[in-house]
Amino acid sequence: MSRLVELGHNIGEESNQDPLYSVPGIVLESVGPVRHEVKVPFHDSQVKGHAVLIQTGWDIRFGTEAYWEPGPFLSDDVIFRLVRSGARLVGVDFWVIRNAEDTGHAQTRLILVAKIPVVENLCNLSTLPRWKFRLSVAPLQGAAGSFYAVRTVAEFT
Image (tube, one colour):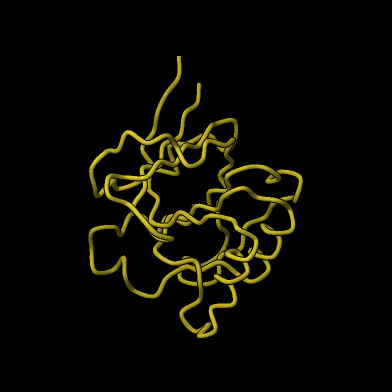
């Protein structure tokens, strides 16, 4: 029997559109302080062709002012390795992947050039198995453009 877990806060109406992505997923847990650059140990072969979800625990702040404080961000090394290893999608449980001090947005550009979609503001990553699940991402009603609201769901047995 399959189990579905909602991974987003789903602010918006359901749409009847097919998922934008439906790919195998893997959860990587961040090591180190939560308010700094995210470091996640992984081997390149683990993430090739997968949705890589990065769990920091920042999502417990969602709905509070503390959520929007400077928090975790992806290190240049992690972004480079995700691109090099062929990750299909990157998901994080915080609100922005880049370092606020990176005024040139080099981190964001690297992922955009590689055409790897990024899903931010995820929640419930701690309820997922570390691997062997399918991640589906579908647009919510009225979503358009490069940045829009999505429904993110994981399915596993």
